[in-house]
Image 1 (spheres, chains in turn yellow, purple):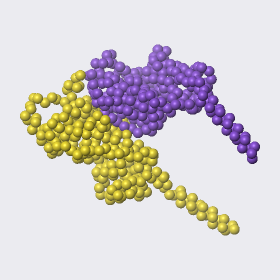
Image 2 (cartoon, chains in turn red, yellow):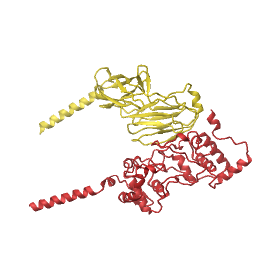
Image 3 (cartoon, helix red, strand yellow):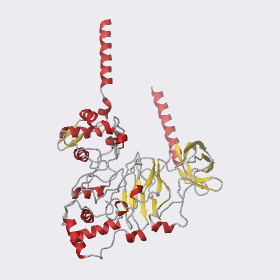
Image 4 (cartoon, rainbow over the protein chains, first blue to last red):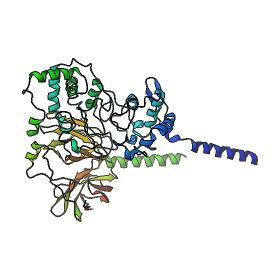
Length: 285
Length: 237
C-alpha cells in the first residue's frame, strides 16, 4: 500500500514537472497561420524566432531586443499587433500572407533583411509565433484585403489627374512638391512611439518598404501604414483616382523606368511655363 | 424540502419586484460640482500655425495649447467626471457625437461618448487633415480627410481615453473619452459639471483631466442634488 502511494506521488510529481517545463504560454495563444497551403506551427516558430529574430525584436516580441538601441527605424513591436504593411483596411489586422510577405521581402532601407533563405514552412511558423505576442489575434480576425481593380492604361490624362490629386489631397505636405520627402510637415513627423520618421522620398527611392509594383503603391495609400503618420485614403479616393495617383507618383521617380514618366516628360517638353507648381496656391489660401 | 422551495420562490419574487422598482424609479438625482486645482499649472503656449497660413489667419491672436484649460478662481475646463463604479442603469446612447476639425483645431477638445455610440468626424477646413486616434485597447486607424470630404462614421467598442492627433498639423491634439456609462459630465469654462438622472445609490465618481490624471471619490445619491467637488494638484512641466 505504502509503495503504491509512493509510486503515485512520484508519478504526480513527474507529471507536474512536465507541465511546468512545457512552454504552454505560446501554445495557449497559438492561433496558427496559413499561407499558400502551409500551416504554421507556433512552437516551431518560437525556436526559429529565438535563433533569427530575437536579437532585434526581443524575447517578449516588444521590439526591445539587445540590438534594438542601435537599430533605426526601431524593430517592430509585435505586442501591439500594429502593422504598416497590410493588404487590409486601416484599423484591421494584416493577413497571414501579409506578414509572410514582409518576412520574405524584408524591409527596404531598414535593418530588416529578406528572409527568403529560410524555407517557406519556417516563415509560416514564424508568422504563427509572431501572432502569439498580442491577444488581439485571439479576439479579432484579420481584415478583408482591399480589392485592387486592374490597372488602366498610363496616359497623360491619368498622370495630370493624379498630379491634381497629389496637390488636392495635400500629399506634398509631407512628401514635398517634388516627392523628395521634404514637405512642410515632414520635419515634425513621428511614429506612434514618438520616434522621428521621414516620409518616403520618391525622388531617390526605387523600391518601397512594402513592395515595388504599381499594385503595392496603390495598396500603400489605400490601406495606410498603421502606426505611422501615413493615413488611408480609401474613403476619399475612388479606384480610378487611386490609379491616376499611382501613375503620377511614378513620374516622381527618375530612377524607375515607367510609361507614366515617359509621357510626363514628353508633356513637360511641350508645355513649358504652363504647368502650375504643386502646393503653391493651396498653401497661400 | 418543500419549505425550502417556497422560501426560494419568496426570495426570488422579492428580488424581482425590487428589480422592477429600481427600473421604474423616476429619473433620479443630479450630481453637480466644481473642478479646481491647487499649485502652479503649466503655462499654455501660443500655437505657431505658420505652416498653415489659412489657419494662422483665422486665429489672431494665436490660440493656446489646451492640455490644461484653467479659468478665474483656479477652475478647470474639459474635465470628464463619470460614474466609474456602481452604475446599473445606463442606457446605450444612439445619438451621434459630433467631432469637428475647424481652423486646424479639434472642437470639442475632449469629446465624450459611450462604447458603441456613433461618432461622426467632420472637417470644415479647406485643407487636408488626417485624423489619427491612438488607442491601445481599441483598434488604431489613421484616415485622410481632404477638403469637402464627407464625415467619417465610426464608434469605439471598449472604454478608453484615446488621444487624437493630426500628423500634418502636429499641434492638433484632442481626446476621445469612451465610457461604459451614460452618467457623465464635462466641466465647462467655470469649472462646473452636472451629471443628470442618477438613480439613488452609492457610486464611485472619477474625474479625469488629460494632463493631471484621475481622481475618485465615493458619493451617495439620495435626494435631488448631490455635491461632489474635485481638486487636482497641478503638475508644472
